[in-house]
Image 1 (cartoon, rainbow, N blue to C red):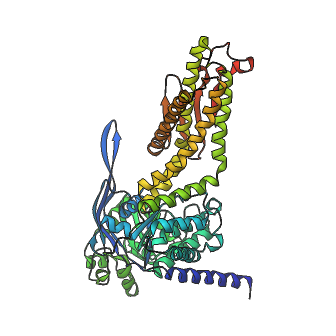
Image 2: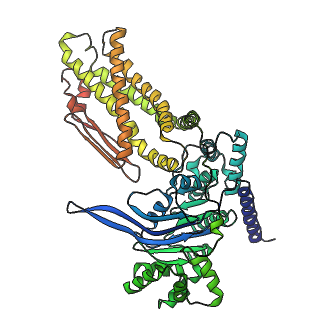
Image 3: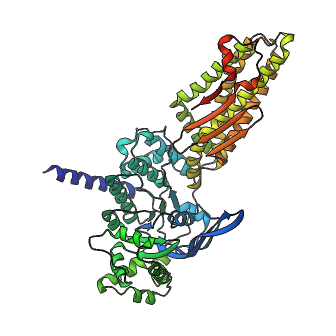
Amino acid sequence: MSNRDKCYQTENNSENIRTTGLQLLPKKPEVHLSFESLTYTVNTYRKLKKVKKKILHGIDGSFRSGQLTAIMGPSGCGKSTLLNVLAGYSISGSSGQVYLNESLRDEKQMANISCYIQQDDYVRDLLTVRESMTVAAHLKLPTTVSAISKASQVEDLLDAIGLSVHGDTITKRLSGGQKKRLSIALELITNPSILFLDEPTTGLDSQSCRNLVSLMMNLAHNESRTMVCTLHQPSALLFEKFDQVYVLSSGRCIYQGPPKLVIPYFAENSVICPPYHNPADFLIEVAIGEYGTGVLVELFDITKLTNINDRNKCLTISNEDNEAQLDNGEYQKNNNTDNKRLPYKTELLNKPPFYIQTYHLYWRNVIMYKRNKTNAMLRITVHFAVALLVSYIYRGVGNDAARVLDNMKFVYGTNLFLAYTGLMAVIVSFPLEYMVLKREHFNGWYTLFPYMVSVLLVEIPLQLSCCLAYIIPAYMITDQPLEIIRFGYFAVFLVATSLTSQSAGFLCGATMPLKVCFPDSGVSSTIYLHDDRKLTVEIVRTSNFNITTIVLKPFLFRVKLVTVYIV
């Protein structure tokens, strides 16, 4: 047997394993998704006036169970917007009707039977693949499912998704295709009927793209799921793998149907695809308007036809393709009664109670902190080192009545330092954490209160350690009064300031993740969190402490003229 045949046999065996593993999961009802007159509007501002801009213009369509559908179109045509509206991720500004098996969508039921996998792979980088799956199983599955059953389901899914050999690999070491598979596996824990994927092949090589599309085909065909994804410009080989494509141009639909009917459909409308041309590229060229805006207007009108007979007249192709066209291309409600018989009303999963969610989220945070000890140790070390520096400058001011003004400056500077370190510690890291939080919360992993408690249970002890690493040496070296009550007042005040600033850091990190400015008369502080995750922080101008020159040693005299930058 040749090497090529061996590779082919190995690939087929892996696909069989995946199919077998997925069949072990509990079955959920098949759901047919359709929508009518779907519109999405956003508010923009021109010359200080609010202007409404339409992203989607009353489009119709349907996505059936057991089919893999690709939403295609040029950049800015509304692909991701349509996916966000259908998934319920963006509701404000949308109008129209969304049906599940010809019943109006209920948000709670929709959340129970669907999941949304976004373009960026927001996963916990410091957990292993198996740990990520185990935590997801404990958070998403009800308490009636035993721990053994959850572990068995995790192993079945890892085997089904092709990640069993990488179960003990840290997720940040996975390739792009493996991370995408993990993102899918995390949501398959509850076996959803509908999967929405935003640009799943972005950033992947051709082999990874083929493997990922093959996986999505298996999920759709073998498990009768409704798989909907957005694509920008697939290769001809990938394009043929999809059961149905939905093409957008400027927020309007110009085609819905099987890929093999693209060329004859457009030929019937006097738009000829060049020989040996990729049909996917041809679709994008038509959607951009390279074949004229008049063609687009005509295509808009055709796709708005609601009568099946009128559409058949517009799609007079060969007789052998008409049946496939009717089965895949129509989007309006018709006489097909199979979908009407599909059950839709399903029992909502009993999510784990508050204390169980908090427990698993807390231990997940503990594991991540243990594997990132450098960050915690660096924070404590910096506090201790700065305490030594500042207390050396202000040494002995606590019991010297002649230097009471310097003592006041020491207290002010200490308060300022702990306030800003508490703020910066989370304002930098939380924007990255926030994206994972949005994905997990939207897909129903947990509620926000257990998440908040679990974060505070880890962050508060660490911040207390940082404060004590600064307060104790600074208090002793500056020769402050050795009275327990006075030390208690000093410590409690500074700890409260630090924790309050940390709370403000969480708020700013969640609401202003890209740029945060804190102008102050005494301190200049600006944070820029760029796309490349580089951070530039101007923390403090030491000259604003107004330290008495006599106090400073010669080697520290220049320090008061320097602005400290941390990059």
